[in-house]
Image (cartoon, rainbow, N blue to C red):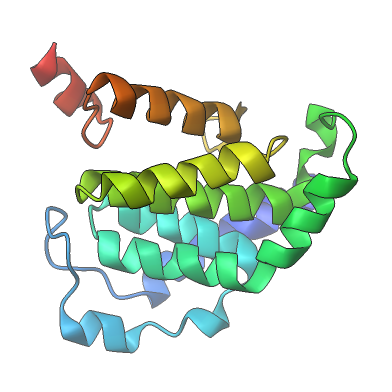
Length: 179
């Protein structure tokens, strides 16, 4: 399992040098030249998710969405089959065996967050409800070394939307400014 994780990190690191980087982290839309240079077919699924998060963190939401939607398009049917076959949550040590389920749910979570940030609340709610209803055991890995429940995070975001709480980009600077 460590080899797989190490390989994913290597692919991710390499992708940071291969992918064009937008000129401003604050830019929500990539330049046309950046979009044309991205060949998302070159990336295995695991790096699709990592690169989607990377662009999300750079606030390049259009490119993040491109990578997230590619993962969904490729693996959604299989992810739904995996979820349907599960009778109970899988043990954390087996999380990587269910990567398709986990990555598709994470891709949808990224998509839901982007839609929410863009103000498309109805579509964000639809995506987040899809996670809750169809990916109940999905887990995401945080690079700090822990796993989190994607459907629970989706429920939290739905509750925040219902209560009118805006966590913005969830960065510590944003949250402390609101506090």
